[in-house]
Length: 111
Image (cartoon, rainbow, N blue to C red):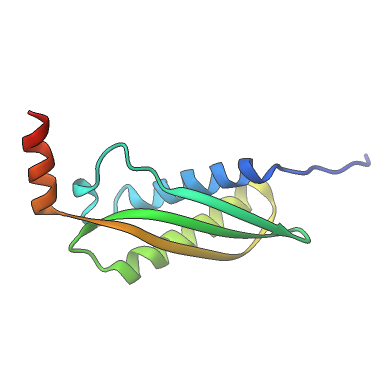
């Protein structure tokens, strides 16, 4: 059978965002990140290779490098597994850190 399949960039970005969320679910300090915080993803596709850019929020204190490494590995694995497209780079940007103190303050405001 002949043909081809092209996934829209927004589809790849949505898959990458969900994969990042999967990786962050059990990350240390995750309980301090607001429930509505979602990883943001963007992708660039060049000659059947995907580059992913992620923006995440993390709880603090946490080993930022270890969490970012874990997110990069998981996102690359899941995007390749689900789409068959080679992921050649995943960049993780930590947009915000949430501490225990800020979490307590936010909860106090909500009540």
